[in-house]
Image 1 (cartoon, helix red, strand yellow):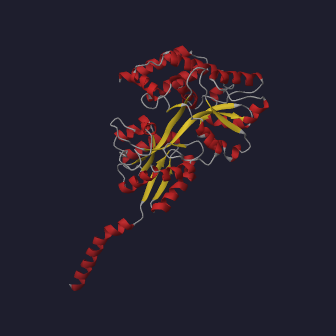
Image 2: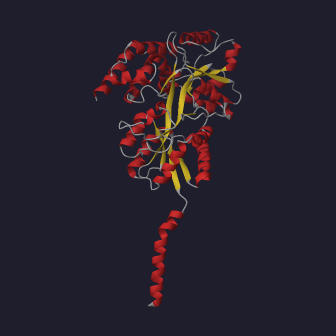
Image 3: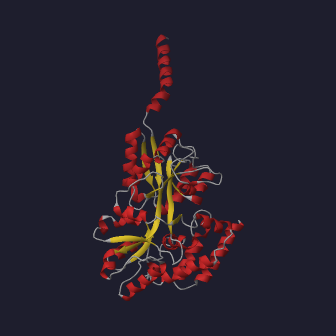
Length: 412
């Protein structure tokens, strides 16, 4: 009986100690992302966080095109990651409203260290912030410096100069642009929405279209589509079957002088495959008389899962992301072309990246036009832009389609 009592006492003591023993185990979190190409860089800054805190975060990326659907399935099933890359505006807000993303409004640094323009993409209708801003991207014209120097060409200052430059290149036997339409996203996101701030202006004008005060068949939109149509005449032969991945190679091989793309492509152009390419970048210029604008899009933020078993550790990590120290470590580990949105001054290590970021100076900046309230227009706009490029519709007719789709959204 004494042995049984002693054994029982030992079991009870172990049971009492078990919670503290379990709690002493190192915390391991998981992180979802669509940036599978950045796995090594992400592992680097997450390793730095582990050095600082002892908390391990395992990076578990998904292919970009599959991320939204995969993440939603995981969250619905209760198997979502503790932390995850969040898309801005409507896509991220939907996950917050469904109860999956934490409210991070009170996480230290979120409201103190970011301007209102950076928080705009992560603010829900109830005013709460659902992700910590991390990186923004811009849309620029990449060019082959050797081709420009060969013909004594200069970076254009106006859109009219840009068109004249394209024509001069064509007259000299050079292909002006390498853009195609096969991927059904970059002709809208990078080319047209990259152009649009030069016509519409910034967020104060964008909201007038979101409210219906202005219509997307007005003079401004018709003009933007007319200029897009003029530019589309300089797309390469066979552009219908060319995708985003074809453009850097055409530039490097001298088969095209320029292409319009996101700042993230700077990372690829700095890689081993393009080590011999002498390249530069300039902003898509505004028409003469218009204030110069630029798409500086809130690309990704960091969200916390409301169902995590480690909420304190998740919030501590988000506070680190929102700090100048964390933002600098992450920014310097990002591929070139992903830019910090924090108020702190961060000097990037790659000169091309600093040059592209400097293109923002003195310009009206805004995120991609449709992201905040008009994302349902995405596919119709791609279809109309493709049709203009193929000569199947006119800018005026496309603007009427834009306005009709805008009206549908406002009627919901």
